[in-house]
Image (spheres, rainbow, N blue to C red):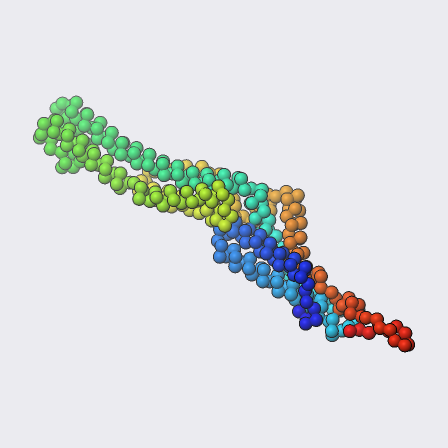
Length: 329
């Protein structure tokens, strides 16, 4: 800015408040849109803040730069101001959908998003319970099949008994001594069933993974319940990833395992979906907020005097013997 013009305290205060509010709204909107990525959100918002700060600084400069240089002129070339104002308008247009996305999510869709986020966590918990149930069914199914063959073996005679003996040998090769008494054979088979159940559970279980998911669910539940704006975008997106990881682990252990994903698809990160689903009244209300905030950012430029106004203010009247004269100072 030129040396002979200093921004007053009131425009400067509005300027600072406008930048702070504008940057905060953009950061929050980007956090929702970028899955809670704080670094990228702050970087982009800071970049826009710096651009607006530089634009306002240059606007004030071009509005006041001819106070000393051309005091006698009544007009000046305002093309630089027009170009800078156009650039400033572009920053407002770029930031509008981001700010609208924050307001849309935080005020209009907060309850539905919170409900969907908690439903995603419930799906992870239900997936775990369903897989544990599937393990029990697998173990009980194997045990039941052996017990059925064992019952058939002890209830059969002659060649039919030989058939069921071969069935049992196929299940437990070389593990049963059929030359022994039936009571000993039954005891051997039941020991094998117990060992098989322990082995199956050891191979199929995911209990060593559950503490990580339990801690995750507890953390994410608190984020949704308390609506932690800095983290809700991250957990809303990451809950799907955690669900998929657990399902993949379960499927790798038990290929026959299936589970139905029930949470409703409510999109949180689509900025333009927020605009597309909004009413005209909602859009106009947000536009009014953004206009007010950006007018605060432009306060130094709006309050800055043009050179001919500065001349008028710096013109003082002096009395002389010949009469009243005006001197520019």
